Image (cartoon, rainbow, N blue to C red; front, side, top):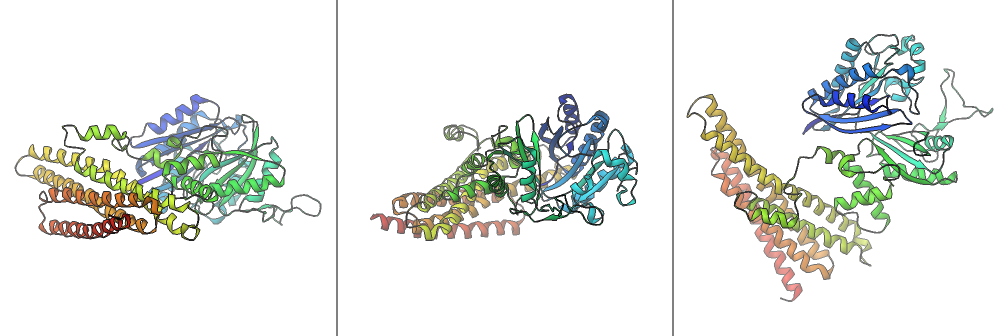
Length: 561
């Protein structure tokens, strides 16, 4: 998957017609999916999030900036959030196999086009910055829109692209490339912005303002404010405090620039600690824009560990626990389907979303798919689910404290396998349908010529796909069987029968998938390729049959049968 995410921030949070027009400009580009529009009346700012191919995102970003320039007049703009332009900031974020370096080049192309075509001063920031002092957005935006005209007169602040004079209507735009940033606000039971800002200074990476002997902010010879470490200082964290009138509460507004270093739950707890020092209480938090699934999973796992429960819970449970623990519904409803980026870009899974009863009915119809391949994948998913259950049940037993980490790791791997095998339920049917379509087109092609060769190649590609999916099910099914063997040996004695069923289901998944590999091998024309697939599948099946016999024998003996 090669995708780019773009998260432009526009200096308009109140006029829905303006926001709809900007969103329409983004949506007018084929291949772009607008994921989120998050306006704020008090901040007078809206964050939009869209994804797509690099080429599509490049065009959509320019159209959005162009539309904002025509509709937003910065001379009349007032809001709680710092800003310097109609399109204040426009970052590009790599997703999937896209690299940060590719996003840097993308930012430079868009920046040049905006500067030259729209006559808006453009500064590059983060990974795309032209000099170290311009890496930070806050440094570039210092002085905001009101100080822009004077700033542009300084040689040090000549824009990277566009005229070195203020654009009175549109201000200036900051464009760059960065890794995924989580915009995260923690809400307090106070209206006092100064208290929120004190907490922000105590947790952010740059620290808090250093006071001189006169009680005022100390500054260096160049007039820059001096800082000192805060008591709860967090790496990769930027923060400020503000008051949001529509909520009637102050917030600590946080940008987490690397959530793998400082995840949202760590920021939440740091704010709780600092709030308690000031006699305040955290009431909840909110995600502005989208959040990665990994960050939500981490928060759920952290909360479960604190409760003495296994963190290897089903994904839906982890998200629920994270949502409740972080108070994500405090000021607005948090809908995981809309706020988690992976859920927004995930391909549809028509079979995986069915009820159990409906899926079985679907299999029992006259259509050839879903068929044995999808059923085999489901058996593997059920095996991994049983292993995860036994691991979690054992984790919570008294006397198991020494083995909890191992059980948690085993359960987590089982949950991952479960997810992949359930995805394969749809993937197998999709692969079958693609093969049938390729064969249908091939039948209608002429006997010779370029069209015939192209369609024959398409059939071979579709045949490989119809082999690759069950081969992956065999690999995952064998690992599920190995995990079932582990949990049969380490798990609670009362759940031994569940471990035995997990082993049988996993073995059925592997053998069933093997049949699907074999039936499609005859469609390959490359003898060497066919031999490689055949050897791999036979090896997997052989290992599976040996392991199944070993596990089931141990389970029967332990059960006295």
